[in-house]
Structures are given as structure tokens and as C-alpha cells.
Length: 209
Ligand SMILES: C[S@@+](CC[C@H](N)C(=O)[O-])C[C@H]1O[C@@H](n2cnc3c(N)ncnc32)[C@H](O)[C@@H]1O
Image (cartoon, rainbow, N blue to C red; front, side, top):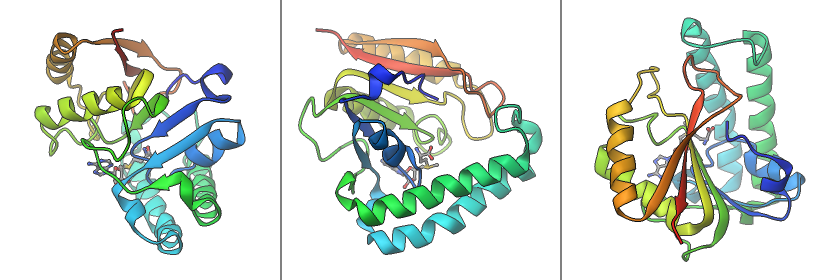
């Protein structure tokens, strides 16, 4: 989703927000990154979070399979492989949140509990743009500025479609203009990963020195 290279990970301070019930923090930490995941759900006790990961994963798997025509299945191989990978990720999250709870901080965009420049890289997937039907342009702008505030080098956001797959070109153009005016440079970069049809681009933000 984020075109991450080994250099992006090893020894780098990375924010994953929203972290959700995903395995990114566990997997990137195993590759040498220093990851903090932030999500409002982390206010819940680790054991309860771990228990919730399974039904949430089953809901996400069922959704994708019910709307199979909206997705490309070549990356996962099949609906069964997709389900297996998602269940494996949820299990890895459940294990990691129990064994390394300090990696998981409760917090919400657009106001994160972190000083400026706390991270080298901030990553944000499947909240901004995905829920543009209920999160307005002002929320998006404030959240993007917040991600840029806490990341010294770059913030990356994926995908740039809403959860139904609708493109959001007007919103993206508006946000890029506003961010430019606030001294934050943006670019659109192609991703190798594309599950939802058309979700092949991420937005990157770089504070201008
Ligand atoms: C669809 S999940 C995405 C999680 C993960 N990035 C992924 O791709 O699997 C959306 C997450 O956004 C979190 N969330 C909702 N409102 C938020 C906010 N204002 N700031 C940060 N996270 C939020 C939810 O708790 C949920 O875990």
C-alpha cells in the first residue's frame, strides 16, 4: 500500500494511524522499525482488543467477498487466500497487542498525543478518503496537517477512493491546494498494491523546510 522499502523501515520511527486490528506494527517492528500505532480503539484493554480482532476481520472478509466484483483478486490469489491472510494478520495483531501493548496508543486524528516531529514517517490507511461520506473536507485537512506535524520526513495516505470505490478527485485537489498554501508539499505516487479496483495511488505529504 505504501511502497515501503527496507530503508523506509530499518531503524526508522514510524507512525501507523489508524492502526486498527492490523499486523503492520508487529510486522514492521520485526523488520527493525520503531513503530507506534495509534487508534481510538486502543483505549480498550489488550485482551478485549484481541478478542474483537476476530469478529472484525470476519466482517471485513465477508464484505469483500459479498462485493467481490469491486476488487482485484490477483494480488491475494483467491477469496480463500484473502480470508487466510486477513485472519493471519488479525492473529498477529492480537498476539502483538497482548505482548507489546506499549506500541499501541489510544488517540484520534486530528489531534494526536505526540509532540512535533515524533516520527520519521507517518502512514495512514483506510480512514481518510475511505470514509469521505462521513468525514468532511475540514476533518481531512486537519488530519493531514496533523500527520505532517508529527512526521519529519513524510506522511503517506492510502487509498484515495471511498469505501465504495468512488474517486474523490475534487476533494483531493482541494486538499492539495490547501496543504500547499500551508507549506506542505504533496504528490501522488502509484502503488504496486491494488485490491479495490482503481486504488493504485497514495498521497504523500512533505513539510517544506
Ligand atoms: C478500516 S480501519 C483501518 C485500520 C488499518 N489502517 C487497516 O488498514 O487495516 C479504520 C480504523 O480507524 C479508526 N478510527 C476511527 N476514527 C478515527 C480517528 N478520528 N482517528 C484515528 N483513527 C480513527 C477506527 O477505530 C478503525 O480502527
